[in-house]
Image (cartoon, rainbow, N blue to C red):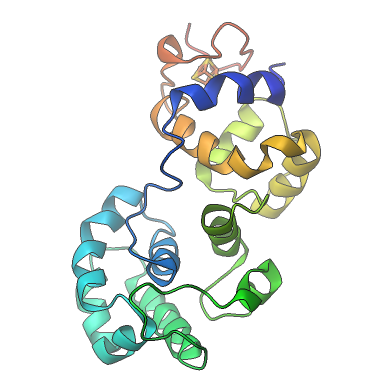
Length: 219
Ligand code: SF4
């Protein structure tokens, strides 16, 4: 079995480590909004609507001014846009109670730099909180999206009983050395999106093809 050490020694050199997320955002508030919008939607699709949205609503205050119907008009091409609009308006309303709600350079108050505190905010579940903590503040959480989930199983790093994102995260945190935790999500998402894809993985272009023993390896 390919070990996490072998994987995380080779693969980061082949993905862009400068960008921490492919989601477009302009500040910490709009990043959180983009992550909420990305549930059941590709980053590419989200990025088609967010530049216009964030031009008019880059802060919690401006999002409230735009209103739920105005927000829906921007995001209606995305799945579950009604629910996502409710979540985002709830988040914006809650952040209006805090400092900085009118700052275009919005930063979450320090008390929210904590997964449990973030998860108390409207619209922010465990996966969203993990991605925010990891991307914005470099926290060693592992956001488990479809790519991380699939490939953690593909590489044999988690057992069949790891059948939820929460269980996969717990298993990965104990399997993967701590020094890699801050980059696990980023590296596995990009490698999973472009090379180690769900269907027809591009093994000929993969930097760990010589050590990979995944059953669906194609070379
Ligand atoms: S060799 Fe193929 S299956 Fe193995 S990690 Fe690379 S892309 Fe994925």
